[in-house]
Length: 177
Image (cartoon, rainbow, N blue to C red):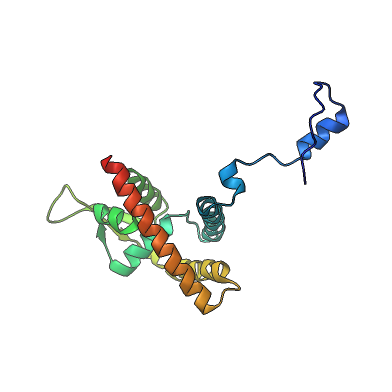
């Protein structure tokens, strides 16, 4: 679809206004060129959207399942360790833990050895969700790799790992600049 050319006049009819409203908005050059960064943005947005839809069925929000999976696999954890394991920040983890606690999925308690440290543990109610959350991850993965051969999946993982390394290096460099 192309956009209507400007006639040089400032008057427009109702039909022209409607046509203009339906015309696609011009994209920035970097987006129109279909850069890798824009592709990552689009894929990430859709992945998060689908994950959110699937997780809502079990009463969780995106990111909460990562905390629960760590707790189910590793047992009770210090809140600071969960930040590192999930790749989060302290403020986000605090809000996530509060929401999970309010939902009855985790319990917080002081560490017996150091009262300044908070230990987070899954509750019996959350243990009942484990199978469902694991099923959500399997369904999400099936959607992601649908139509990809095992070789294409392996190649995608390799390329994504290289991109992740590049971004981690760039982030570290930017922090020290």
